[in-house]
Amino acid sequence: MATRKNAKPVPVLCPDCEGKGETSETVRVGARKGRATDDRQAALCLACLGTGEASADGA
Ligand SMILES: [Zn+2]
Image (cartoon, rainbow, N blue to C red; front, side, top):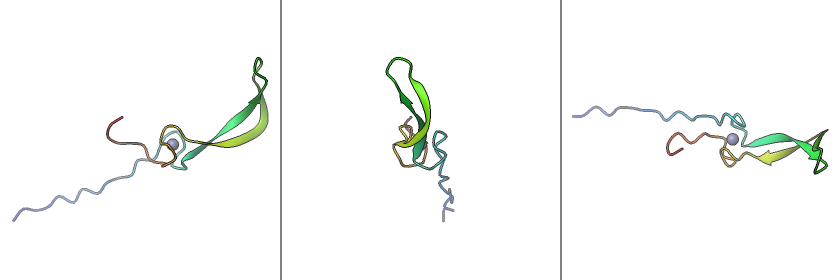
């Protein structure tokens, strides 16, 4: 009778978006100067692709 190890998978929150799945980035205008405006836009987090969880395996 083997005792099954109850390993609970701990969800690791994405450090980039803190589990939100999206990041807010500053809107920049001007190709040359790249002046930052006060506007912010939500962008899909590229680190977790919107899942909000950091991939524990793979990398
Ligand atoms: Zn993320």
